[in-house]
Length: 314
Image (cartoon, rainbow, N blue to C red; front, side, top):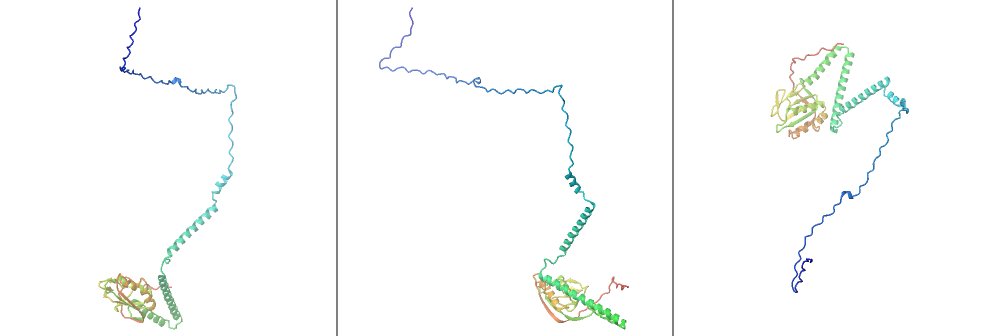
């Protein structure tokens, strides 16, 4: 029996190129997968159950402990007692509240009456002068009335004395009412209004300022007597006084203490300032005179409703 062996490859001829060797495909080897079982697992501690103590049927039953009695809080009781006012304390509290209310009311009244706190120095001086003039006038009236009383009580012929005093009183009242002419020291104020901007309110303000300064008799342009019932109406160009038309220049004559009347006219913010200001644009001239003649008269009208009151009986 002969062994069948493959023929050996013939040797390459000298000078011949060897055949290229074909590369064999290499199959990829699978990566070794790590199994979970190969990783070590840490053992978890096992909790052992605690034995439950069961009460023995024959053991003693625990007795409930008694509650401790509350001790009285003396400080709290004293505090509560202090908040309960007695009758005397309540009366004192009410009195103090009334006193506080009265003090607050008094302070508010004082603040409300303090209207001269922010007044200018010139205003305060003018107010003091006016108060001084009123005081002197009232004092002279008191002295005159006392003199009349003394003359009536000491006179032998009381009827004749009373008649003379009544006539003197009529003359005084006639001057105030404008039914009698008057003479005395005073001022003459000349107001020029070239643009015709002066109104009745401007002239009325001038009259009021002169009256506040103590003017006893006033006339305008020598024809219009100014009394308590005189009315001023605008009638441009000019002003109508008691129905009588007067035009610029307005000449205001007043009897009284000449210096006080002049100061009232020249007072800052008064008559002269108002006429010479931009609102009117006129001129004003004030002259103090030793003698002023008031000749214009006011025709009295019969009163329709007012009647003299009966004299009081003692």
